[in-house]
Length: 179
Image (cartoon, rainbow, N blue to C red; front, side):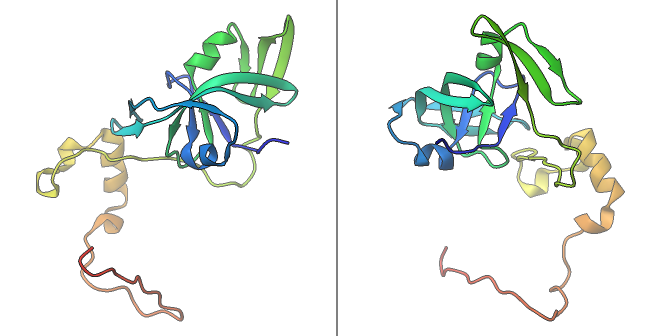
C-alpha cells in the first residue's frame, strides 16, 4: 500500500514536485542528481538537487508514472504541474466541485479532489517579498496587496516596544551561544 499525500494541481507550475520529506521515505525509486533552480510564487528561488524518474502514484483507480523534482515544500506533499496536465489534455474541469475528467486508457476517468467547504484552515504560502535590506524597504516597494494588508492592520505591523505580558504559561526559546 502506498503513502497518502496531499496533492496540488498547479497549472502555473511548469514541472511536478515532491516534498523532500516524502521523497526521503520512498524506496526503489530511480533518481538522478540533477540540480535545478526553481522560481516559486513571490519571485524567490529554491534549489532542487534531485529528480525522481518514473515515480508511480495513484488518484482513485487511476495510476500514473511521472518525473518529480524534489523540493522542500511546506503546504503540500506533491505539486502536479503542466508536465502532467499536458499529457492528459484535453480535460474537463469543474473548479467548484473539485473534479476533473481526463482521457485515461482509451476511455475517460473522473478524478475527485477534496471538498474545501469544511472548516479546515486556508492555506497561503508567502515567500520573501523582496530581498532588500530593511533600511531600503519602503511601503512603495511592496506589492499592492501587501500594502493593503499592512494598512488594514497597522497595529500588528508595528515594531515591538516591550516584552510580551506575563501569562499563566510563559515559554522560552533556548538560544545557542554564537549561533
